[in-house]
Length: 424
Image (cartoon, rainbow, N blue to C red):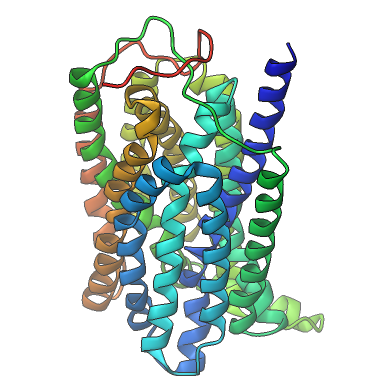
């Protein structure tokens, strides 16, 4: 009984640290999309030119997921999470200390965000699933924190830039991240945070054949979904800056008449933040009400299909309809992500979880540079992003069709006792 209570307490601590890591990782690997708007004015460079500096970091965010997963299998998830917090924090601080106009140094510092940010998904997601009693609920909580991080990527730099400078937008979150890493290291040393093998799910068939079927299907859907996700993450601010320009100007004028001066970047940041605030709340609610209750395949297919109208809204809608489309897309991605994670955790032996999740995020996050380059190219060529999101509605159709090949009948709720998975 005491062992069960101890495992439950450890599971809660793991959920807390992994969720904080999820929030910080997402905020600190995305906030450059907002900071770049101010940096473009300060450095007198086009925002799309500065956004291209993040492409190598986005590549590393995907590519480094696999070695990070290998290191997690070898050295343990808790230790690798400490490395992530400290490394991500120091890299962010380095970005804030770059000399004005030094694009090469900024690109190198941004690469640090990619390298250390890559650790999270390979390590933290599997860590939660192995130690959680209710996997769908735990993934919902974790997703809420991840979405909070994405919401903060608009708010935090907007506020810090308004109060101080673009340097503070990098340095302050970096200090917070390092502090959390030190706290986690202390908890590990005290024996309060650890890990355990993956619990067995009753009635589920596992083996090489089933593993390759699931992973082959997900490799395609995750790569395509990664392009959609990154396009919304990095393109939404540019869409809102254009289509909400009139409304933002009116709000700024109103506040200015009351003696409150604000910058455009703050309002664009708030609009992008709204996307992930709503999606985070939705993911938390979906943990028990949908993901733990309904078949995983059905939920995944429906979420993929609904991305089609979301992309069309971003492509052709006015400012507010585009905002609704971006919110819908983020909510639907919030439903798809946990399902992918649960399936990978179940069909991959526990001692290969790091490699399994590393492989997933090489595929999923490796698609981000494609989206970033497409954003820069389409905007430079056409002056807007309508064509990009119109094309992505077709990509969403392809995701839906491929998702139909997943195994049927799987549910998220675990039935059975904790025990190691057999090696395949």
